[in-house]
Length: 135
Image (tube, rainbow, N blue to C red; front, top):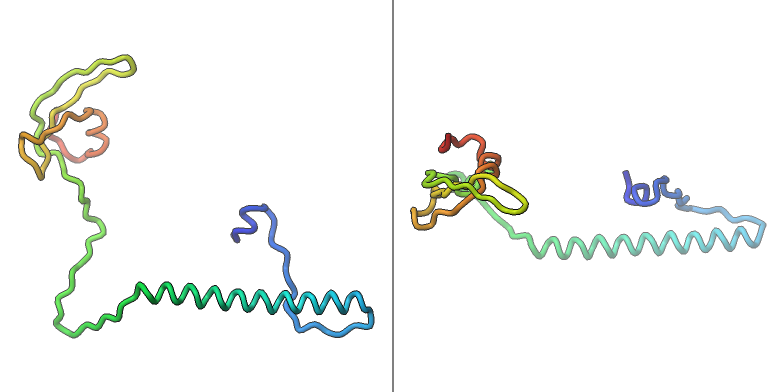
């Protein structure tokens, strides 16, 4: 789907891109000449836009060469950078105007007991369904 169709919910009008023939009717002839001028302007604008995009894209590129035996970092796209709950230290009930439930004092995998935080029990179980530190 083109952006035009997504916006207007109809297919875009098709511009007949020349070459145009000469006619004997002056108004049609002037319309065709105007259309040729517009087509040429569109082609020039597209060429300039492509050149501009290429210039900016090339600024961010760097030439890299690798030889056999080079060590390269392997990107693990499945790696989760979030720390995981390591231990449940305490449990408390919380009550308020809008919600009630339990909270757990959680020690995280990359921090000490002093850095433990109180977390909503239901939210923690949803975020870490595979970890079974709690009952």
